[in-house]
Length: 197
Image 1 (cartoon, rainbow, N blue to C red):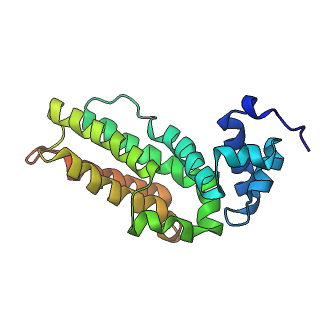
Image 2 (tube, rainbow, N blue to C red):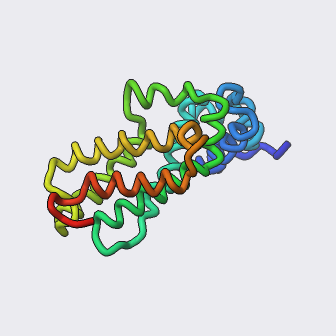
Image 3 (cartoon, helix red, strand yellow):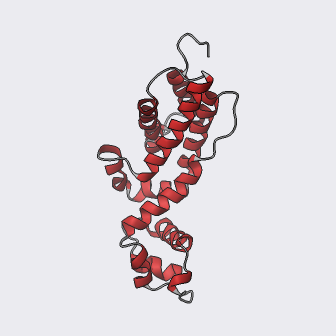
């Protein structure tokens, strides 16, 4: 067991690394604050002062884990092309992400509130990334006219289904074929009317 660290020196990254390791090994429901504190080498009270429960730890971890993936958009000839490529590559990375795979395998019901009740912080972050790209597309003329906030929300809802349903969807359809179709869907939804693909 690692020696316990002084509470003022422990960074959130250490605690988030510890909860990530615990979730990958045990799943969310079986992970306790005691497990995380032990793995991080801190007292349970030190951890509790920063994160009152495993749910708050998971929220911070998911924001860190998935927020980093959302910002990895590469340059493209237009904002729409950049958005389409960014969405497809982000979905590909999320599908392959070990943390998300573990949650979907062991604790999929934990994601249900974020599908039917409210948007979580990671979804809100994703929506802001989409919104910025849509606005850039309005400016360069590559995205059809519309209310940016509504376009971003609709795109978020469509894209998250590809992430959350990927296992069922790729049981009999190759993943890359499905991602190619996602690219067509996103491009077609945002392309200005009358413009050739």
